[in-house]
Amino acid sequence: MRTVCGKVVVLGLQGVGKTTTVTRYIQKTFIQTKTPTIGASFFSCKVEIGDVCVKLQIWDTAGQERFKAMAPMFYRNANAALLLFDITNYDSFESMKGWVQELRRNVFETMLLCVVGNKIDLHDMRKVSKDEALQYANSIGATYHEVSAKTDQGVGLVFEFIAHELIKLSGEDLNHTLKVYENVEDHEVNKSSEQLATETGVVENVNLSIDSIAHGKSIRSKCC
Image 1: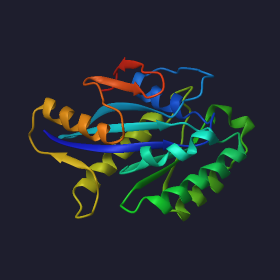
Image 2 (image 1 turned 60 degrees about the vertical axis):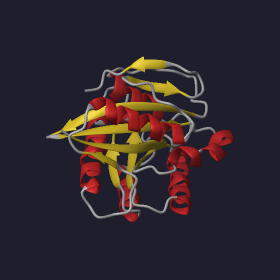
Image 3 (image 1 turned 45 degrees about the vertical axis):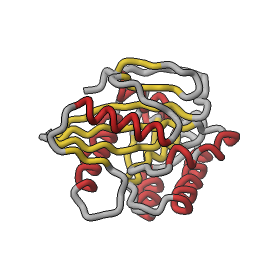
Image 4 (image 1 turned 180 degrees about the horizontal axis):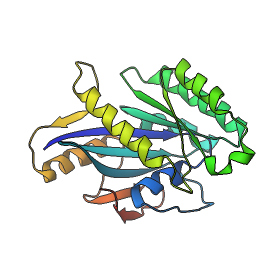
């Protein structure tokens, strides 16, 4: 089976639901936590699309301003970015635009951008209209998605979309950091994944889905 390994970075203001969105997909559960991410957490998940196995290496970054200076070490060499905001918090939408400017200043290779509006279960409290968010996403060449990490609405579709697009990217003649393997054993892919993670300061544990830089917690993957 052909394997594609891509790096995904998750960016957004504190409290928009970055961690809950990722853990909803990885662990198939909603973890309501008030503890903010410190630095970043690393997740790994395999997604099978037809005859291709896509390994997503997901970096969930801290949304607090004091950690912003650390962000470049996590989005460097990323192939895709999830730019999250809270549809009930207009300031989070404006803050998300700042991350787009940050990526444009510092990332020079092809990157898939996905603008994601979270908390659509709170639609009665919406402050950012779908039309405005969609218009902005179109203006920066991104796709737009709306999700609810709490109710699991649309979350899987976002990550499956990224997997599909990374497969397309791997087949194009572009300068990118995607790693593509043809008919190799699983342990060889994991080895390369560890080496890639080490470049940004964290060694991934084989067959584990998350390695928190801040807290050192590891959880077995429930993803496919």
